[in-house]
Length: 53
Image (cartoon, rainbow, N blue to C red; front, side, top):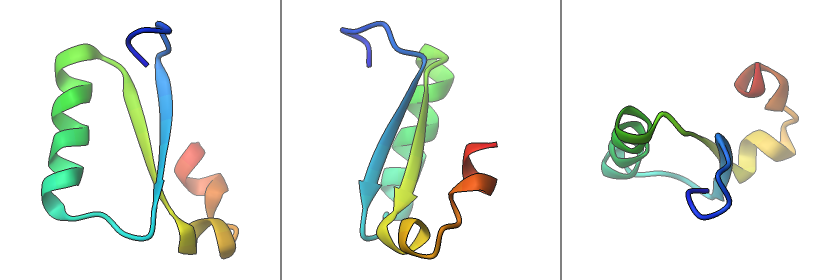
């Protein structure tokens, strides 16, 4: 994201630890760039709309 000067990125995983979510939040606070953490379950359940809004 930083190298390509993007303001939003996506990370897909089966699940996230609380430490990983804290790091995503810290990255946003430090850089102003948002990482959207999606789980495979959310994608399969088609719950993307509310996370991307």
